[in-house]
Amino acid sequence: QKYITKSEARYAEHDEILSTTKMAFASGNRKSASGIPFLVKNGKKYVDNEDNHTFVIEPTGCKKSRVTVYTTVASIVEAGESAIVNDPKGEIYRKTALYAKERGYKVLTLNLRDMTKSNGWNPLSLPYKLNMDNNIPESEQALDDLTEAIIGPALKNTVDRYWADLASLVFYSSSKLLMDSVPKNHFNISNVIQLTHESNADTLRKILSSMDQTTSVATSMHGYLDLIAEKTSSCIYSTMKACLKPFIQNQILLELLCRDEIDFKDLTAPEEKTIIYIIYPDEKTSLCFLVNLFLTQCYQVLITDSSKYADGRLPKRVNF
Image (cartoon, rainbow, N blue to C red; front, side, top):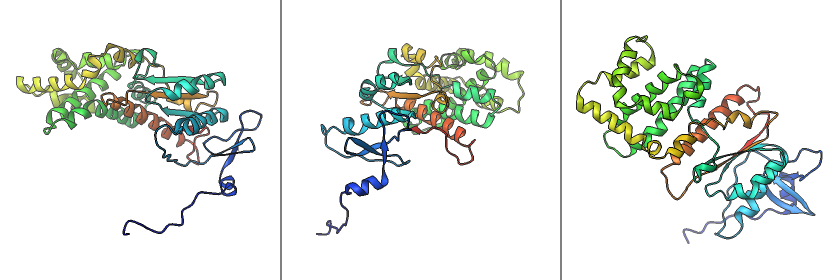
């Protein structure tokens, strides 16, 4: 009895659904509405076109994807809007990508399940672009997010975060030093890994001696290069090597992350229609940090772009 509560909840009637939805058009000159499909009546599809979140609950095999996800993606394409599609097994890509391509979309994938079929994504490209635009605080924030994503797993697996904190200094300062020193096409994970190798410590000390000592990168480099005890130094670099293990052991992944083919600004460009599918092995968590970082960078770009408009809204909606 104590778990039973009275409720006036009920299913909505057709006229109530029609009052809160918009009609979607598969073709024609009128701009189509996009969103979750709520009703099909007299051959017309009505969708929730507002910026709402939708929670769908059904048992396995009840056609959730076919009825909800595929049709929603199709309505986004019909409306000419942009989308980021969370698609671990690649099923949504297989069902909708061709439909989008036929309607003039640029279709991109971050495919961590089959990396040979993925577009390249250089996670260091965003901080580099922000730095070149003299947007230093956002550039450093993007670099800090990247450092946290790579070193973060080491922090979860240890009770003593001292070594992981020092490894963060190594990665961040090496990335910052490289960013200020090389052309864009050389600023990638592979070259940062080279710079974080223990054998380069003496070279970095020579560079540090000629730098402006008041800069953040010089302060960071002092934070670990001044620790001269052999055991301390070895622990720092062994922690660094453990954090970079996913890249060092997977050459295909490393090559993918050194190519710069995905630009989040395409999602809001007036002349572009773009859809990005994120495909990754959800049965294991080893690469989830890259998916999280991908979405974090995407949000950062979209929020920065939206702040340029008086109402804080992008001129073209980006659906997740």
